[in-house]
Image (cartoon, rainbow, N blue to C red; front, side, top):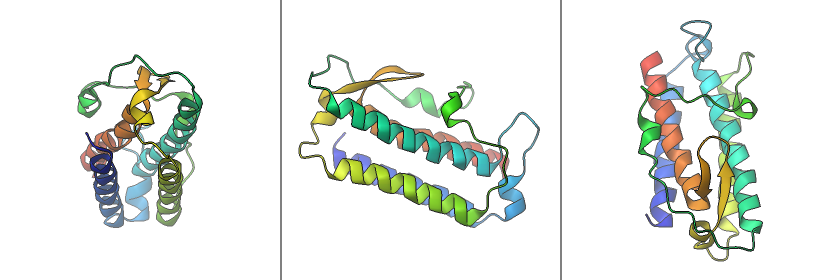
Length: 164
């Protein structure tokens, strides 16, 4: 998949998420179906925390001098909501009530950090030649880290749709 296609998917997925959020009120955003589930606000908190951590991982992977022998991964498994994936502690949401404006601001900030990181790349093919170890999915090419952001967001958009 070409970089501009990935960039387009990132935009489309984020616009879909923001569209859902704008149709919700404060109570809907912070309501939890049960004590073991996340609210929409917590899902969004998880999404922007994940994106921020991914930016750090991508930057670290880009610093590597070695080319990777890792193959690109299929990320379709992320869309299978029947398979529970436990989020690492670092991207777990808190229990605090979050206002819509704050959620949108944090989502915009995390996306801006990602886009800034990607925009300064002189050679975008580095993303397909270098890898970094993901805490859940193990060795992943940096391009797969970027691709997994919109696939991960699509997974959680489905979760939000189930909630509402």
